[in-house]
Image (cartoon, rainbow over all chains, first blue to last red):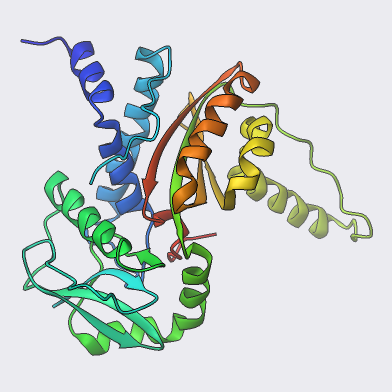
Length: 75
Length: 226
């Protein structure tokens, strides 16, 4: 069974940080016409807070940047 | 029901392909705008698969036209008339946004570290200095502070020639200080990343994490867009 820290490292170094970016883009950005939020206000807030928390965790567990230059996040 | 994926500036020459649930995509024209939509019986269930699917559809559409405005996940309308009712009044604003993003992609910078000392609020020359005016000026200053990202100022000189537009967002979850979204020409993203690498030494106290290229999600006007 993997340790939590290893899980975080795997998530962050495995390119899945782009999944967090994806969630940010799809839930916090984009054209909004309806004015309604399909997930409910609370759902959006929770997901967004988790995004921030994980990104902050990234900064704490990864002292040096690991940015694949020119990497396309997800096709 | 009509599910909106994106707004386009032109009719793609290639077939639009399928949407999230394998539904054929089609174009609706309202108020001079082209909406790429799919027909589905219910809202998509949020989740990694659906998010990735939505993004994949937007990316495919973005590759077919010169300008695309992605819709936020979950933009669902009961019928075409309901979509038209929402789209038409905002046609001017959306057309302007399409012009802005034409030929561009979005690059995202997350900035980590200690916040820069806040700039002091200065009264504007010639502004009335009554208590009400001071209160409003302070509110305006706080609003600007909430959206500013002075920590990346040393990078801006390098990135500026490559950035058509910038949106910034400040966060309250330190050490994540904020996010800068940059519009960059599609064929200049490598130059943008190279400029960023070259500028890292200018930010010894902060870490900057880049991602992209993305479709220009952050440059699509939303209800809460500043």
